[in-house]
Length: 262
Image: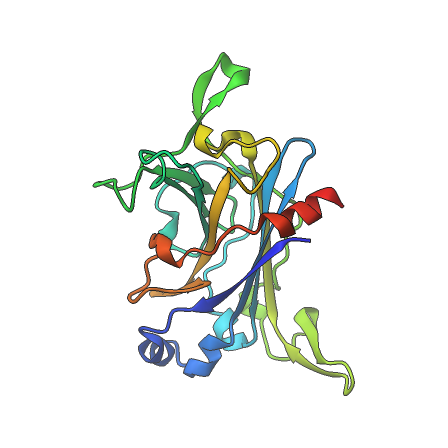
């Protein structure tokens, strides 16, 4: 089992965005994004994130900025939020007042680039890019290194956008098994893991009990269509701001621990 997050589109500029993309507002609202989070123990304890995106219209899929994953691109890069970006915000459950407002931001590009940032409080860093999350690298004589993510090779994406068409059966999924009717959906998936050992000390918890560790988890996605950015999250403030912690879901230890024990 995994904790499932169903993301919804921020609608502040829905009508304008739809007009600029030459689609209807319903087209944009029918984009489906689901993020699942689980814990694995081998080869080391990690939080695993699976981002699944379904775009049911060829005219939208053809405009989506979605770069091909490449091993050579797997390195730390700032400003990933300026393009299509898979994100997650993580907050600990520390009772220390100096640590209670701290949180981590993960950015991941479909092509493999990533960045992890550490905030002391809500958007506390006055300049961009934010300061990176650092961890103690025991393999390098306790030297502090930039945190990283581990990518899965389970990559799913549709054919080249130049070949997309409503009749492209390579990305069809069933919508009504009784009538055997199908609707084209262009599916994209990325998976990556965050080693638990890279979390700051106030997160650390070997047993993953509910008393300490991770309190909130806020997966979100930016999809870029040309000059238009669409924002997806479990809940939104207006205008969209992923950093607003009052809108972040709680981390469901019971569900994730069930998958951990299976």
